Length: 493
Image (cartoon, rainbow, N blue to C red; front, side, top):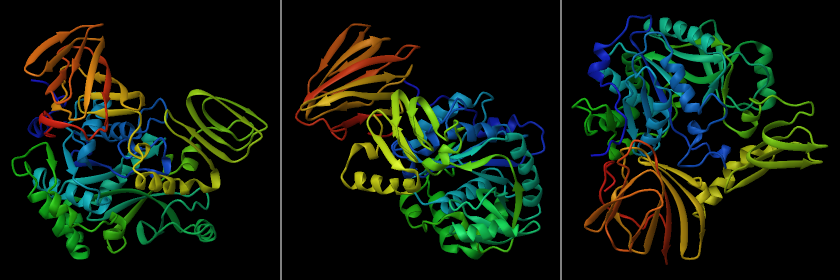
């Protein structure tokens, strides 16, 4: 039997192990969705923005989890994400969950924005932890530099939430930014929400002193939030309630719950701002200045990198001659700039982006075109993560494809068969357990096996270190959809 997810404390164990602390009733809810199309080619549909590793601090998702786990008294972090990303998310948490917090999941069968996501989290918390649970909604793709200041803002938000308010986090603007929404405030009360303004209007907002950037972070009691949804977004709440109630495992207390697809599809595709916050009269604000940034485009990401004397912001080995105000992401090879200005240059293994920095928002149009054409670079990188490990496409051509497979210890691929391709496996590190037809064998380093097309087969790693295999595929069709699964530990059969 091969493990699929490293075990985390169960909810029952979490309740027994609660420690005393100011925020004992606080449940951080990480909202991990969105494709991050404006950060292509680094962000892909199967490797979206939360998983981007932008520096030594780890991915944005890992940073968000660590920030939530560090809050006083927190013993559980709930994550709402797409069902296809759960195993990648578990791998990310394993790297940073040193205190073994409980990490339950609500899994979405399709994207429905932050309104339905947070509604599902509130219904889950009400049922599993109690109606008075205070939720802290944290987008998984934000950057926060001053975590101590953020923790102080959370404490202030909890006090307001416990008094029955829906609390938004506002950031004091440092300039007329047009990429963010704004909150008009009077004291601690939010008067109105304003979507991304023009530059002229943003300048008026900043000069007035009445506006804050909307950070998209919210704090509220589950029962208050659900009551407000019932008053202002009853259709959304009804659809999500049905998706939660009919979710397999929800009534049985499963730690991972997949929302009912049919019911969830009926939920309006609305952000929590549109669905509720702009309509409710109970919205308060906690202003903060904790080094927040919504890394939504290459221009925003560039601002997190210190410029050189010529205004160039560099990640990787870059030589610039007579070039100014450029951002270059090139971690794998040498890049050279000569006589250029105001460019964004992003180099990955299989795609290169060159854009004027004033037009980076149009990158999402490139992704739309690639998606419509069925181009693989819109979906995934050459290295593709799977529940059992990962594979990297090293080279491909007519009738052949070469991959590097890495299988995690005590994990296995599904029992499967291909109609159109044969496979040749060569073990380069570790020990492989191979099922080839009806037989099983163990292969060590430098040993190999051949899998004819139409043969049931499975590759497993029975050892305690990573198994590395070079796979050579041959055949008239080598698409990833040529796979028939007969048995699978992750329910994909």
